[in-house]
Length: 347
Image (cartoon, one colour):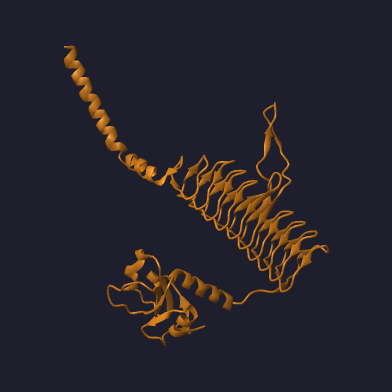
């Protein structure tokens, strides 16, 4: 499909700067743009590519000031990143979507299935499960007994949803995600062995939650593990039993949250963050990559490091850390000088 600059600008409520009739049929990163492609520029680090790219059309922020001539036609919008995301969503929708129930698959007679659904081959839907309207369940997915899946949710191949799990509307669960496996609960015995503590709770994912590939959300020991509305979880993330994550919080890959921790809303976790159990993290908290969090954090904080500390303190610590080799040499030199002074004094 081809679109010209003017039609794209009209869709995005933007303005054209250049040839409004030029057309594109594909999208590309600005540094890899070729003739016939559409790119965008939102990060100032990539400004130089605007003057080098061969992309036919580039979406830019309204307030971008040009430093040189550009070959591409520009479309100016208030937020280039959001505008480009809207276009990608439109492109995805244009590709069409699957509908219908493929065979072989298993749907328990007690389960209820909504309208306009897609259920792929070898999918399993258990007893008294409820599948909403416009849901897409790809091949080899498993939906356990008494679970529910809200309208418009997408469950990709290989997802495992244990019994009693509640999934809201317009969620996305990527391949290999496991929702509702047992929490890590074991009681030590006198002989040194561990007795498994039954995990009888469930998992609740509210609306607009996205779970990355091969991430795991454990069921609660009692009660519910809860991911609130709009939470976004990257690939390879572990959420333990009885954790509660607030609205619109995002977590990057390889993050791990220990049991019974409460995370506030609109938090941002970098990759490989580790959070201890039974603590509270406030709203609007930013955790830098590889932060190790052992204690509760108040709202509106940015922390780094392991153990984690306020970003200002962390910057000072990291500055000292970088200078450790030089400081070591200085200490050794001072030690030698002190030894010489002691020797002279003893003579």
